[in-house]
Amino acid sequence: MKQALRDLAALVARIAVGGIFFANGWTKLEDGLKITGAKFLEQGAPAPGAWATVTMLAELIGGALLIAGLAVSTTGLILFAEALAVFLVATPLNPITTNELILLGAASSCSPWSARAASRWTTWW
Image 1 (cartoon, rainbow, N blue to C red):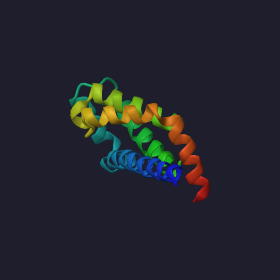
Image 2 (image 1 turned 135 degrees about the vertical axis):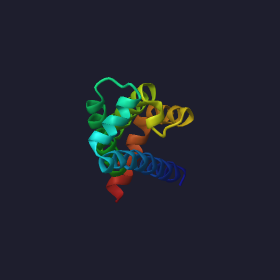
Image 3 (image 1 turned 60 degrees about the vertical axis):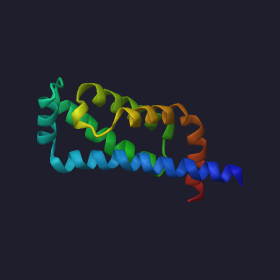
Image 4 (image 1 turned 30 degrees about the vertical axis):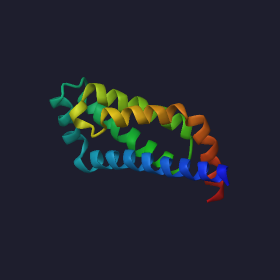
């Protein structure tokens, strides 16, 4: 019973974090790469077109992978690195606050545990 609750908590957290990243990536896709690149340029980011493309793809693909429970450990670390990079380069563009970034880093450090739980729930689905 206790393990089932831990697995359920990991599932809910994985879907929530994946959903947030996917929604951010979808917003960048809807806005278009030129508009998103212009926003990065306003913040002084180097190679704003590349930033727009990489962040959109990382958030869309990474969010979908987290939701699906695939490559959770690797995806979590990649998304943490992407969020940290955007936070440092273009803080006003990304709605992630410092507290959320710390929580995301803590979740990434627990990723081997959540990967085991995710694999149990993914096969259960």
